[in-house]
Length: 167
Ligand code: GNR
Ligand code: NI
Image (cartoon, rainbow, N blue to C red; front, side, top):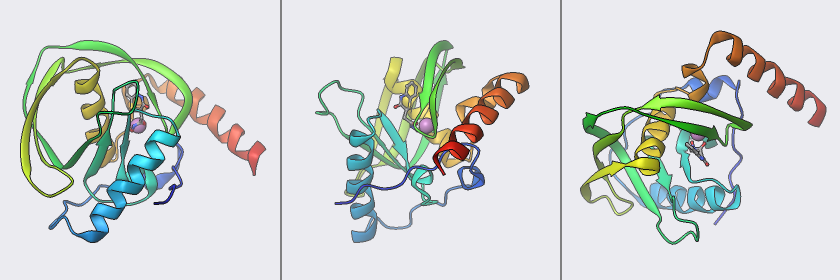
């Protein structure tokens, strides 16, 4: 097991497009285990491989309060989307920033699990928001992209300043 380094906005590597996983092999299983460890340690409720600089379509999520509901989505695809809902979002790659974002209220998602078996899941509420947030990461998209240019610039400057102070 290993803790992985999480990239921070505005790192250009967060803009990479993740590639589909051809086969869920030993390397992918190790990555999933390390991603869970990294997400729990952060702590966060989701993590996309792109955030740890691995451009593969792999997501881990656990929205439970006691880390008892680990979920893994490999090559996730949203098959149905319905309604709208606004929720306050944060991101491990945009630390300390929380802003409301409008997303689909409920979705039907198809993916492979950590063993490579296909499954389908209907989600709403926080789980639905989290899955959409993570799939955005796989497409090089961040929740700050839904905010105004002015807000995004302010956030970028704040994080760049934080980064300079810790270097
Ligand atoms: O930990 C996280 N919390 C969160 C809260 C509201 C909406 C989305 C999220 S995902 C985030 C972890 C993260 O950055 N995943 O990419
Ligand atoms: Ni995120």
